[in-house]
Length: 142
Image (tube, rainbow, N blue to C red; front, side, top):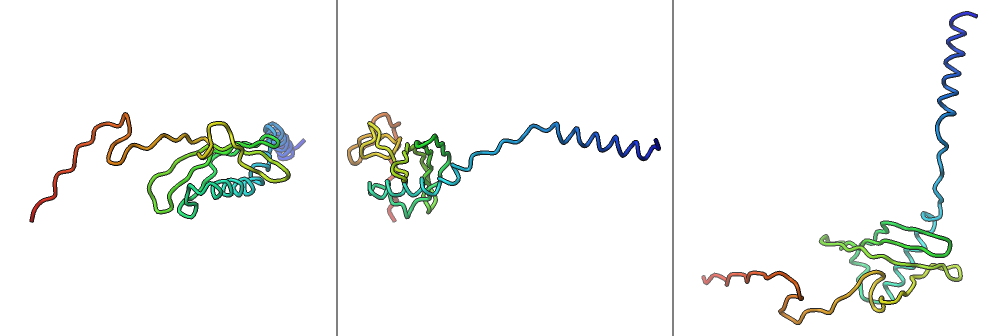
């Protein structure tokens, strides 16, 4: 056998071995991406019904979405559109009659998903456990 033919055969065999030795790539289920718009709509409907958040002033980002059959868990981040802070909330949803809906769980009445609320401090006072804050200096007289 001539050398160029032998090198060509060895090269093809090596390419075949390399191509076949790669582990098969698993494809992720398209379900979370396909279901995200419906879940987002369910979250927005839930929040609008509560009326306790200005959705127009917030950017809503679904950070994590886990779907198991007809149940889903969503970790959602709310960011103020005008800048500033953000907060993350966890929501449980279920698929009922062809529509996703936020589940009402014990301890969340009136609150959002996994957020807990505490009573507000009286006006002019800091909440319990807050460190002392120095008073601002009086305004300068001109």
